[in-house]
Length: 298
Image 1 (cartoon, rainbow, N blue to C red):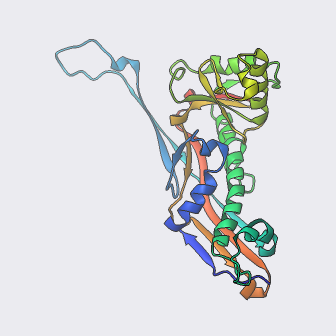
Image 2 (image 1 turned 120 degrees about the vertical axis):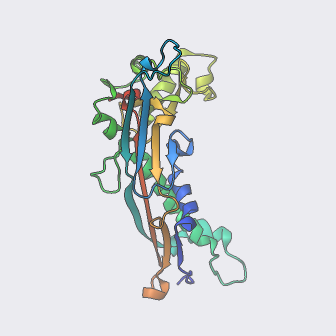
Image 3 (image 1 turned 90 degrees about the vertical axis):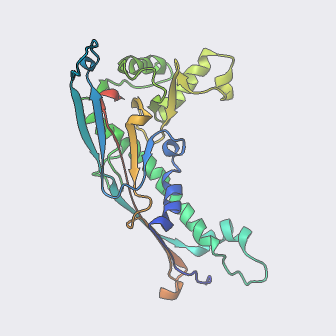
């Protein structure tokens, strides 16, 4: 029987480091492809404030207010989620303890073993969050509404009818997304086209077939389409693409709230088993402020 570990409990700010590493381990968040809003305990209002073009008028000697103000609020309420996982310490001795056991201490486990187990579970959290960001549905256990669900339900979003993507047509289909991008959004520095793994493979294959200096076969070129960055989004469903600005696309979570916690509870002294109970609680969700600036190919 393995030696017992002292219970490890992290809450609020103490849990922030573990949860941040877990949540940000997915491709989309790790690469900074969304605007992250931390410390959102319940919900946050995404403000949309615009002046009409009539605000610009000929100069006069008097102060004359002109143009209308369009203002709207969209609430982003992260969903509460959890991880409850039981791990057997013995299963991890060959992968961790073999390299980290101290000689002469009769196999006593170092306290870093707790961090190792938390990191392992954190990688699972990152994968699940990545999936939810793009194709999640709040009705599914362990998921929140992703961008596809939100954009589909929004009548102001620019919709593009999707086809079945393949290497032979991916360039033409991306062109449809480009054409649908509103003129006010096109050319902005933080504009990007997001696509899932299957579509991204087709894109790379098509670019390689074009033969530009053979660099796509070498994998050294920047992914873009006529100057618009292409972002790989592994959590996105097949035959789906999204175009939007990073400043209009948000991921909200509570990294330092009282409800954010990580617990590692050794069961050796409880029931004599070799198990460790891992508990994680956090919240997460995505949203955008201006639907008319978003393009959904689906």
